[in-house]
Image 1 (cartoon, helix red, strand yellow):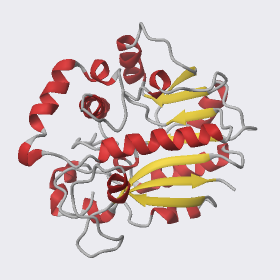
Image 2 (tube, one colour; image 1 turned 60 degrees about the vertical axis):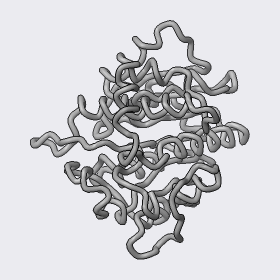
Image 3 (cartoon, rainbow, N blue to C red; image 1 turned 45 degrees about the vertical axis):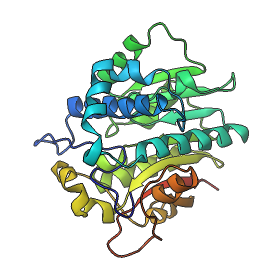
Length: 289
C-alpha cells in the first residue's frame, strides 16, 4: 500500500487470536483464504485481468464472491494489492521454472489454485502445507479437477516440525526449492517468522528461491489500517532485506505500489521507500547463494 491508498493491508483480513496460544484461530484464517480467493475471482472477471484463476470463484463460493463484491466498492474499495501480488508471484514462479527449479513448497497454501491453473513442467513436484480442514475443503471443491503437476499435501501447523514432514512426503534436499509465503507472515509473531526462515534455509540447497510479501511496519501503524489491530501477532517490517540477510540469502525487494504501477493498475500516488507518513508493503525475492 502506498500514498493515499485506504484501509486493509494486502492479503490480510482482521482475525482474532486464540487467547491461550496467541495464534489466529484456524476457522478465521480459513475464512481469510476464502476472502483472497474471492478477490482473485473478481480480478479474473475483469475485462483485462492481471491473471486468470478459473477456480477462484468455486473455491471462495459464489455467494461469498458477491458478498465481497458488494462490500469492497465505492469508498470501501481496496488497493489492488492482492491482484498485483498474485501476478508478480505467477511471473516469478515462471522465471524460477525457467531456471530449472522443479520443487515448489507453498506455506499456508489456503485456497491457492496454482497447482491446477499454472502450466507446470511435467516433472514438477509441488507441496502444499496447511491445516487438514483447509486442504480437505479445497480438494472437495476441486474433486473433478486434475492438478497439472505432482501435487502433494502436508497437513501440519507451521509451529510443528514441517521440514521433516516435507521430506517424508518426498522433498529432496539435493535439488533447489522454490518457497512461497504469500499472505502469511503478517499473521505470525516475529520469533516464528524468523524461525520459519531459518528452517527454510536449513532445508534448502544453494540455488533455492523464496518469494514472500511483507507488510511494512509503516502500514501496520497507519491509521488506514486500524481494522488490522485486532491481530494479536501481526508482523511487519520496512527493512525486509534484513530478514533474508540474517540467513545468508540475497534479497531483492520491490514495493507493491511500484510493482502495481508498472502493471498499470495502481491508482494511488507512488512514493519512494522511507517517505515519512507513507505506508508501504513489499514483494520479496530471496536467493540462496
